[in-house]
Amino acid sequence: MAALTDGPDVRPPRWQEYVPGVGLARSYERAWLPKDVVAGLVLSALLVPQGMAYAQLAGLPPVTGLYTSILCLLGYAVFGPSRVLVLGPDSSLGPMIAATVVPLLLANGDPARAVALASMLAVMVGVVMTVAGLARFGFVADLLSKPTQIGYMNGLALTIVVGQLAKLFGFSVDADGLVDEARAFVSGLADGEANTTAAILGLGSLAGILLLNRLLPKLPSVLIVVVLAALTVSTFDLESHGVDTIGVLPQGFPPFTIPAIDWSDVAPLFLGALAIAVVALADTMSTASAFAARKGERVHGNQEMIGIGAANIAAGFFQGFPVSTSGSRTAVAEQAGSRSQVTGVVGAGVITVVLVFATALMQHVPQPTLGAIVIAAALSLADIAGTRRLWHQRRTEFGLSIIALLGVALLGVLPGILVAVGLSILNVFRRVWWPHQAELGQVEGIAGLHDTESYPDADLLPGLVVYRFDAPLIFANARMFGDTVREIAEDHPDLRWIIVAAEPITDVDTTASDMLQELDAWLNARGVSLVFAEMKDPVRQKIERYELTRTIDPAHFLPTLDEAVAEYRRQTGANWRDPKEKTR
Image 1 (tube, rainbow, N blue to C red):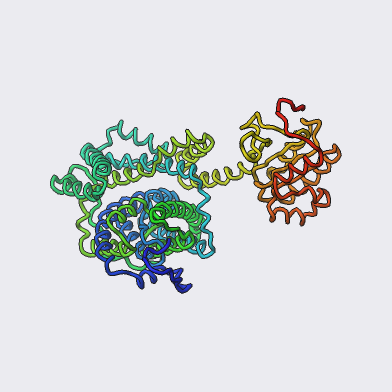
Image 2 (cartoon, helix red, strand yellow):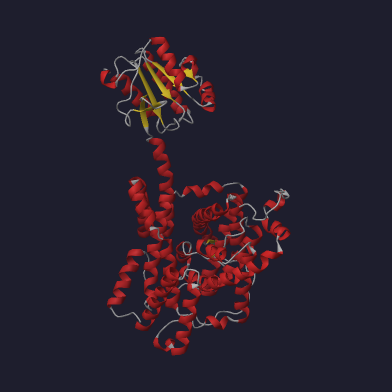
């Protein structure tokens, strides 16, 4: 993302492009400091409770969420290109982390092993992102199309909400997967396992967060609810009534730790890291683009990958877990006046102070309130308006969105992301495989030639069909192209020329080349000429390399559609006529 400082655009040394924090330190303005400090203090009020809640969502001890927040903020401050983005534990990654780590745990899962696995997962995500950024693979974010991303997030939101319901009501379930967890939750309620006091506290916390977000959006709703809930537990001794709390957190800054795992864990962790990297990158790029657009800036996708990679590696070596960009925390920082990544450094400093000097402050925070925080975050992931828009605008993409949702909800989080990516790729392939095709005619009062499906009264030239194929001509659609042209020739007994409006054809591969050679010979045998207009120079060069001009007359490649039509009229003396007069 472009720098926010004013003044001439001086290109930094090349090495500094990979360490934007150095440039920030050199260009930092003293006037920014008060705003960054205030924004950092406000941000930390959100980071502490959310970090603990999202750690539990990932199946890890709450304190690891604080470790993760500190290190990822510092890592991104040095290597991240954006001065406004805020990274940290994320609700969209929590289920993916759990889905990767939990199957690798032994019976009755050892928390220390869970932390080690999650930390190595973060290191792997960081390495994947960093290498991909250095290799300029920023385009990978495009693997998740908007419809499939909406469906994936909706499915993720549903999965998270169902998974947190038992905690919200003060009990736990032993189930895996959306359907099993929903069934176990209903059974638990029916069997009276819910704790009434915990349920009141959890539902009240959720209602408080949602109402404050709606009525007073500038207030730190999560912090307010956490403080009130902790005070309630402490004042009325609700722990004696069966309300679970976080308890006293381990004190001190997390030590540097190389995660110890077994060799058999590497492959499943790496697969999980790839899926998490795709989601984290897509989330970061969409958030970065949204905030950059407000300031008329552009996003540096490859450096963003390096920044996210550095943040994950830093977290992984200090008992943390994978992180991504948070749109809500970024918005909070921006609204609080943040001018640079010093905001994140201040936030990291505040969390460190809490860990070193004030861990007891967290001991009365109730687990149902953490569940409420996660559910509130999950509800913000769901995009019902976007789903409704897809239904009204394009039913095919609505269907892709629903399939992605079902993939996450029924197959699981990691298979769900594979389904979402696969659907995005298949959707691109489908558009190439079955592209739009049109016969063109002249419309009175409108320049150029136009689709006769849209303009059925368009005028035509006898003996001529102008045909447009809106896709690169490759192995997947070569047969369709050839069959369509043959059908056109058979439907027009008086046909003399077929002009292919080739401007949309951005490529011709060898399979399509062989098809064109056979097609031209078939048409020539029937006295029909195959003519191309507006073919791009790179495509024409491939035609030459394939030696197609030995079969197709070089004179049948014309620079514009108008020239091709004019040449046909010059050779035949044909005039435009109403389509009702044509013969087939």
